[in-house]
Amino acid sequence: MSGEGQSAPAEQHEVAVYDRGAAVVQADAFENPGLPPHRPRQTDLHPAKERRAERQVVWWFLLSMVGSVLAIIAYVAVPIESGDMGTVRFNNLFLGLGIALALLGVGFGGMHWARQLMSSHEVVEERHLSRGSEKTRARAVEIFQLGDEESGFSRRSLIRNTLIGAIALVPLPAVVLFRDLAPAQDAVEAISNTMWKAGSRLALDPTGTPIRASDVTIGSAFHVIPEELTSVTHAEGYLDQKALASVLLVRVPLDRLNEQPARAGWSYDGIVAYSKICTHVGCPVALYEQQTHHLLCPCHQSTFDVTNHAKVIFGPAKRPLPQLPITVDDEGFLIAQSDFTEPIGPSFFERLGRVDPEHVPLSAAELETRA
Image 1 (cartoon, one colour):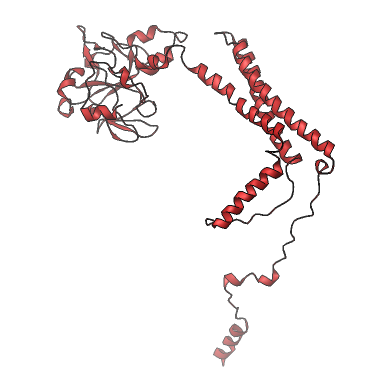
Image 2 (cartoon, rainbow, N blue to C red):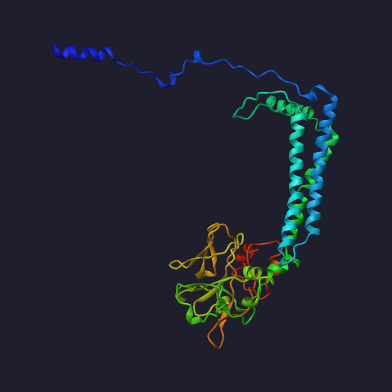
């Protein structure tokens, strides 16, 4: 009896289990209300207001063109004088106003054109994931042509032409600014040679203390600059010269050093010097793995084997790091035998024409990949 009395309530309170997918009954879904009634704009009802809106768009585009020209004039007419922050402020002020005017003119003109003159009828476009049929693609071309007709791009020649002019002039300030960032001298000549020359002492960066061969122990790495660089001021291009001449100095066991006979005289007692500038995009190769004797570029993980003429063993770099030939002077200080025999850093079109005639390539195949 007690067992039957306990089972009855459990049966009465049994909970029905439904499939989760059936939790929403389709009959309860609300009907699509559709789009609200179209409300014509003033420019749709009054031709005079339409013409006025068209003139306003044209004026915005013309204002953008004026801003582009003013930015270039301001950059040239208000030069920056070294040590005078007032000229820096005025140059930035007028340059910024011109560029802002150029960009805002295009933006406001485009928005005003879209809001007042282009077709304002609401449309619904169903999305699909697969490639459309030929009929659908033909319909897309038809819609494109219809959009051109509704926007008036072909018909409103004055707006179209001023838009094209504004867009064509907007990049000009950037072209002038970026071109002016290049050195006044030939760019190829500027990056093809460094401050290193025969007899230049290798000095610690940034103190400029000369380095003796006995100071370089196995497994150590030194960031090195030419000793002459310490006498160059910032106004004279200290940072530019340092960017070209920066070197990593490493000492490895002689039995681990795999040198080709033609380059055997480029090192001294296991001490080798390589450019610090990565041959991929010019980042500083500043990480040294003592156990593997690998140099690592932190930007894109290009890895160079110090024991094998800094050959690329991993990463996007295509050429080994240029090697600086070194030796010691009578006082035991490390010195350069010459400048780099090839341009440092990433490749460029004229690079092969700047390779020293006495440069010793690693191999014929290697020379092709180092172009």
